[in-house]
Length: 185
Image: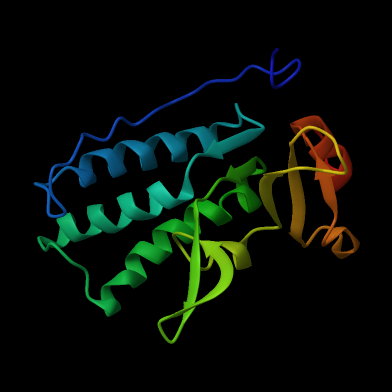
């Protein structure tokens, strides 16, 4: 089965080394520079209609560690995150000027308020992501009305058409998503 009908898919991976400590020797800046250069070239070239970052969680961590390496420190102080956030925002906002679609997956983590889990989930990574994007989709696998388990996608936020907020779609694929959102594929 070809996942994207009539589409050429090109994959670029960034094999981050295995780390045996929480304070590894410098590694991130090299990978960040490679990723950012490739992303910039891909987004500005006009060659791609859609760019997928899998995962935004990993890119956030990479950006953090790379900036700490630039500064020659192991940990960033709160005021130093501004440059990391600016870099991530520029990646997320680039489609507005270059015209490509950007899809970013994220891992989820428990949301805490006053050190107590709320029972809700939030993205693990750059917290402003959801405010900068046009569409937020949540996916999970669950049993649907006696059927075999299905991947259910919920449109959590749709700035393109707010009437779609809360819509659930089983086994959503790219072509269906484009059609639901009223976009060109």
